[in-house]
Length: 453
Image: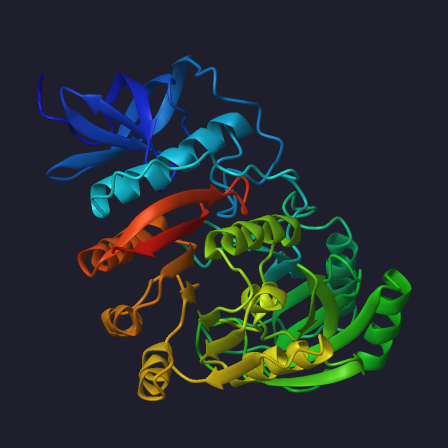
């Protein structure tokens, strides 16, 4: 066959999906990646880019659709970068995510431990308790939506199926106010304008809603009118905040918040732990699945009541505090000062006397605990997507806990870290993926590692 060239149209079958959600096919053993396809699709693919070892294509037409393919229920699917898997059945999505985790541990970690069945999401739509809507101007009016995949182009989006249904009327209320009073919308190329983002949070148990406007100023003209309109729109709004971000950056939130109505935080409860949420607080976006995730972590910790547990990357302390009634001593470590203060308040409100929270980088804090001759029975690891540093892993192993329980939002870095832990005498015993982010490519995984005798 002649060499593949751009704009050639050729028949091809999709034989797999990769970790980016793209279909994988082959033409004479040359791999072609095609977005928005499903395993089993037979297509005519139009080649759009050819590299040395692989290429990219788009669907020119369908020959035969895969049995995994379903009718897309969102009109913004092809433009918005939020959902990558809305075109396949949820059963197929779960199979794909289980395979993603298994492949990472086998290929990256060299670990043969069988992966337990994925814990499916019982609510695949409207499960998020947080949304951040970038604001832009289109045809002379302010609109809000989400960024298109791999870009900073805002796709206007109404009634996102991942968000609570209460959110859209609130967004509309803010946009109507911006348009009526001609509040300038931020232009990131010119670094001009005021309104950058509309950021909403909701407490699953409390029902309380926070409205946070990310602005380039710490005040808003006519804000009293906006406050009243928001309260009329939804009486569950208990906190309205301005977050000031003047920096030329793609980071959404600035460091300074001003409360213009109600409380500085909203309340919620997760696994029996009271939680105060500010705009800057980390919190799992899927409350109900997070409780199932933490229950598995608690089971893996194997607690009997007298253990010393170190909770690294503890955030507001939710994971460790959810186990605190079965722990002898709990020590939490977190780098964000506000989160540490939240963790301490949460422990106080639970009337716990067996907890201690340290503010600092995980690797430095672990060294401090080592110097104090702390010998944990269990270490909980809940690292960011980049995983744990070598220094953290070395220090954890030096403290020689009997068990390590890792909760990871990135199976690739989890597999890498587990491989390093295996080399230091910790063997993976159990792996359970949990679907917190249905219709997207993200997946959480809980891993148990035991110290070899």
